[in-house]
Length: 352
Image (cartoon, rainbow, N blue to C red; front, side, top):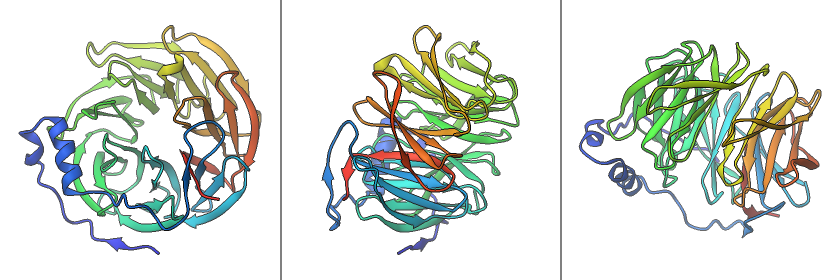
């Protein structure tokens, strides 16, 4: 069952200007608490390896597919808004949110344990929602709104918009959040910049010029490195926000679709959609380690298990998810995932 809640209630931005970021996040958690009560749907929790549940967005079909990892069984499918692209999931895997970018202008909030859609949040005031990540505490989502040139902070459990931060840049498409939640970064495709946003003051701190058409973006936990993929020039650059220095150590891409830093393994994973490969890069040296070739498969979205040992990679053209052992960097099996899988999330919950 869906419930469309009004989103016209805004938290006044001045609340953020007189508090530390930690205080802001804590006050948000108190003001908009998430429904953490256990669902009546049976769910066991398992933390590692090839177990748990995948939630995969099928952007062409406007659905979310649930898959039992251990068996590969398709557990069911839920409707989303039109054109779901990115999926954000809470750390415990209980809740997932899709950004309905392809005309939906909404967020679809999913109770993973109950396999139900709990509400659809209208974002027509902030259209073309795309990138999505939870801030620390898993109560507030940072959502890029490409058409309004901003990042919106939303509480998916109350359906309320907490506030927004203008990027003042064209094509703010994906978001990255530092480990402490103090900074948000966007790749601004049309402007050719990376925007740096401050959560405590709800303001833009500045921007960095990078190679043209920056889309994929991620940031190290300590916020000292912002990795960004530029589609036009086929490069991956690393921005030092402290100095403003932009280095471009990696080239030869056709579409570096997403970038995933796995600091525990000193590893960066970069799916290249148009070339049909996944490049594994050493995080410290920024040197290529190896390339996995996936001709005709369309590698796109990435998700990790909590132990950082297993990578799930959506293959949009094959309609599958590849299960990759990161110790060997090999595909151990493939799982059918419905049509045009893109955004993906792993939950430790076992639902079957």
